[in-house]
Length: 589
Image (cartoon, rainbow, N blue to C red; front, side, top):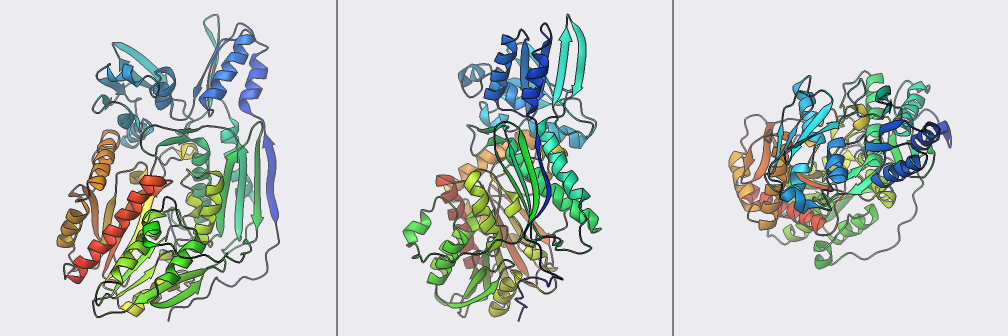
């Protein structure tokens, strides 16, 4: 049997708390107003990581001091030009009547940089009238050029030497340029301070290096919902992403592992970026694992209530639903001491494993797996095991992060409390993965359905190059899609053709995918893998599992609620039910 040991042994207990950094960084805009207010007659242009209300208020304060100023957004400047200068969301009729809107990209030094500028323009193609936006290569260094109603508008893109968006200040007096260059903002300084504290700490020689590494940052910035699908502009969400993945990369480099490695176990990294006025506070600290409290007793949901869920289940709720399924139950302990619940429904049909919540911020698969299991257990001779929530520690962190920022994708909750991807564990102690291995052993599974999700709105890392390194094809949504991994000599094409045909019969899903793929193509080009019946599919040879076929579902579910969340978990359920029947009918070879 797999070893269910909860975590690797540690040499000594960790201290209750260690503070690596606790500092305040002055609000750049306040400092700038104080400086420039004493310089009447100067003309100001600035680019900052501030929302429109804060920028307009600062312009008014400077105007009252006799200093004309225009303050732009340093983050996604082209989109903000359409939102602020052209009032895209308030006067869309004007743009609808304008006909074709041409945007020439800034002169690029590489194909990757050109693609970055295209993605930075997202989601304009979805917000403007269909077919009206034309993106093309340009030759104006540092500027987008927007042609609208016969007028060309140059939109400056402030970039640091690294290629990342940055603050910028441009001062003129009597036509002469006094200053024109990068301006260090509290947004950039907070990131640098946190990373500096982490790089400068004396870490141990071997992971886990900590139980919890918490980076608490209270700051201002932009938090704006857009009118297109789940899209938003959030500098605080982007800072969370920059911090989380940059810290992972630091420990990967330190351990001599390649960037993107999923096996390293540094501990749980928790960037907590929340709204605060005035100075930006940065606190970096090492904490023990949280103490678990006893869960309140609860009753399982009815089938109707489960189908109508509009938000993710907590680990405690998922545990109740798992118990309600019956079957032969089994469990293992997570790193922080939570149970990973599994159950097995035994029958004569070939074995099947269903799992959800491997990446705990991908939430629709948990509900979809439970709904599918209720239906499958009524199927004569059904033979399957279910682990609805594989990573309860990550899910508990996700609950915590959603309290302040329910619309943030919160990738800190993606991995386990050890900081690794449970699927990547290849040797004991397997901890959470032991449940999956037991499910495979109990069923002799020929197919594992692993239900996943991905960001439902744009994913950026602005301070480390904008497009997330290693995740370039995941930056903007492309609808629901499937990945089939198979062992050598196996063929799943007939299975995938039949499965996608059944799923595409849903007009809701078909319309959803068509809209997202159309916007993807206008910003990012062709989807980099085949599209079967309107559903992108990857079919690849892969031997990471002992199961000959692994079907991975991917719905853009991070951050969605209400009807969007219901479509997500309904699609996950339908995928499981259709795939199980096709598998049991012998369509996987």
